Length: 208
Ligand code: VGL
Ligand code: ZN
Image (cartoon, rainbow, N blue to C red; front, top):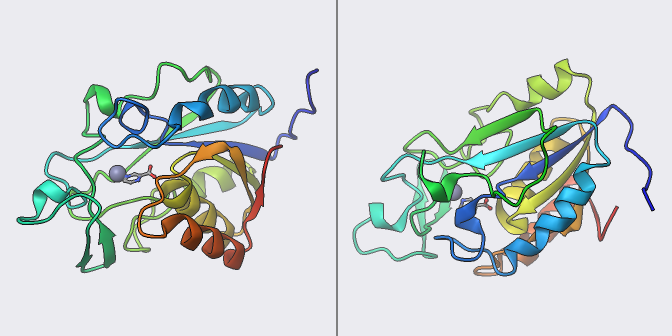
């Protein structure tokens, strides 16, 4: 049964469904490919769809390999705050950075690339990790009259949560649809993300 179509002021933001976050990728999110059928089905119910793409320079500051003696999943402090260090992933132009071929969202209207400044990470689709450098997404959504944001993708506890929290802070009604997300969950990150989302006024629902 076809379910209700969202109204035209709503937008589905599909976060980082890229090869490196899927099984076999360099920062594979456990069970990450389970989001594909969910996201594709949800996509048919939204007229407005925006994709995000993690898009790092080689030697990016968020890579453990860029810091002597550091291993992936350790945390360091940078000028803008605490930074989890990751395996090299989503390097610009690589197959790992490509959007998954399993996505079936031909009507998606915008791809927001983020994390392309060599010395700043960007989990959020709205602001880089310094919480000051905008990506332009707020202006894009406002200019198009899109006021209600739904977020799915990878990973729940990093790019999905940060995107949803910033969306809410920017004044958008914001809902995370859990069945369309999977988490990395390192060092208590999933529990922390859940409380930060609740605190920010992000609605989290199991499904739509
Ligand atoms: C992500 C870690 C590093 C994400 C991106 O998409 O959640 N996580 N870069
Ligand atoms: Zn990244």
